[in-house]
Image 1 (tube, one colour):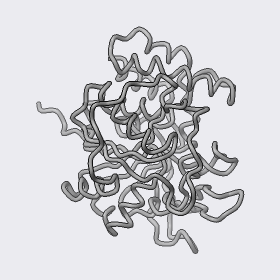
Image 2: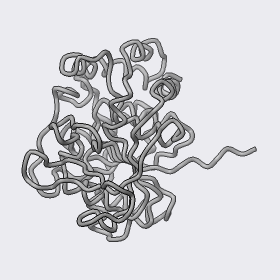
Image 3: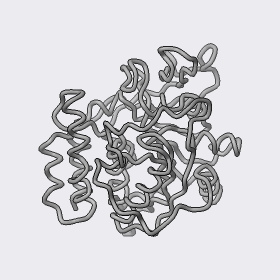
Length: 319
């Protein structure tokens, strides 16, 4: 019996320690075919995120996968700046990897997404691990492009819980609320893996220690960079280990049966004020009054089999 055809994905990313975990997780999963990485500001400036994306692919032995550099700033505000206290000055826990011999493509991230989707209509899943700017730009450049997208799966938002970049907003959304509101209005299925579910997935120090004894380059890199991330969680949030944010998107693609969800239209607060960047789900799945009217429902992940998801990721990353 032949194996199922792998799901074809483009990963938009701002690497980022947890981005590295998600990218390696995807590359280690035969169920997924990663067609390219696109980069965006967020955890670091875009130029550094591009450098890191190329480095991560080299570490994984996948220098065949292209990288397209994307937006350097949000659609309608200044970039809030990198978060070196979370991910290090280099975005990779201050391990300062050598520069890749490769360069990014000469096409923008938004155009790469458009070209890839148009070449394979209704076959491409776009996974967003950072601010949603590149996907929003693709939608603005090519109106209707999302009618050709199989699915958009995002790490971002907090529909029924508080934020992590402000009391109201999750970091990826706060970094470009206007872009997020555009993307949540896409004309294709959207799944939101936000803080409602990612704060239930705690990879402990004992779990992370499993990377240390594995003789592959991916695991070695994760063993080198995760202590920096773990130290942030211990100091700021007083937890043992880390929350597995970005990798949740990959776990969902591989094993949706491990999750529960609700489906509601979503808007983002783009006004200036204390609630800027808040993700607001409608109260029902029917057309809602006002700003939610006509938007298709977003699949908002709300529950998870935590241990099963962590074991799935560790199994793939430590092979």
